[in-house]
Image 1 (cartoon, helix red, strand yellow):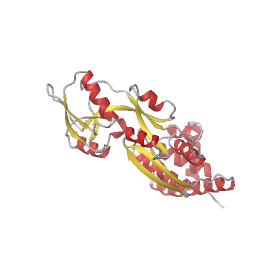
Image 2: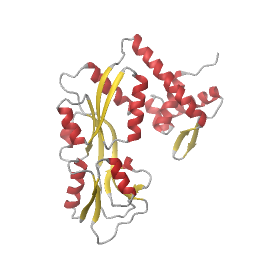
Image 3: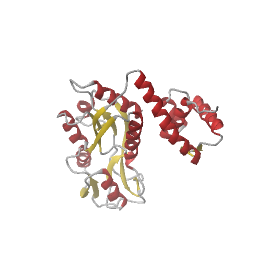
Image 4: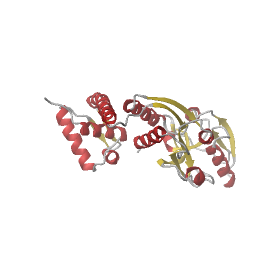
Amino acid sequence: MQTFDLEQLRTLAAVIDAGSLTAAAPRVFLSQSSVSEQIRKLEERAGKSLLTRSKAGVAPTEAGTRLLAYARRILALSDEAFRDLHGESLQGELRLAVTDYFRPGDLTRLLGRLGESYPKVRLNVSILKSDALRAAYANGEFDVGLAMSITGAASAAEQGAKAPVVRRESLAWLGATGMRLARGEPLRLLALPDTCSLHQYTVSLLRRRRVPYVLAHVASGVAGLQSALAAGLGVACLNESAVCDGVVRLTAPHGLPALPRVAFQFLPSRRGETEFVTRAREMLATYLV
């Protein structure tokens, strides 16, 4: 009887999630050539091409998309069976807080994989600004927090000293497609409220570099900021993954200050934390590698 190999299915899921064979290799602890061989064997077994390849990376074919849906269910059941028989089942309620700057697509995939692998975990998810998130986490309002720190910011070392970094991104000046800054006019700045650490950092940077600006629009969240950017209302300082339809990096030279990178980090465990929360944080971190 013909069946699919679990490790080949796992490799397929990793490649599609990562967007390339090279990026998927460390996720499945294989070399790039081994990943390529796994996919080749899986395509032979499936009798169909599962991926389309381009300079931008890989994407699933129609058959690849269909098989991926089965693969996720098969892998989730396999993992659940293993954990159950080894007494490692994870169940309970997890209060998760995530910074508004974290990529929505990645958050969706993260929560989807968590639901598939740990169906007995009940999730309570809140999206907050990083400073508010840290304060709420310190007060015990959440079990796990994923926050953003600005590299080189005065409080970044204290905020993230013991927090494992799961992703780093560059900050960038963003605007609408085709936007050009008008010479001699103040920068029309778009930002989140002034309680946001990135707002505070951006304003401080512009003042230090003596860049004239006016606060043209304040959005309640990143999605609203992206809409304002796409509408051409002004310019914003955001992490590079905020680029979306109608929103691009400003074309150099734009005369604005260079920007640092940011780090997304799970906040460190608190004293007295339960084993369930510790394991849940470790599991979430592995999903974001």
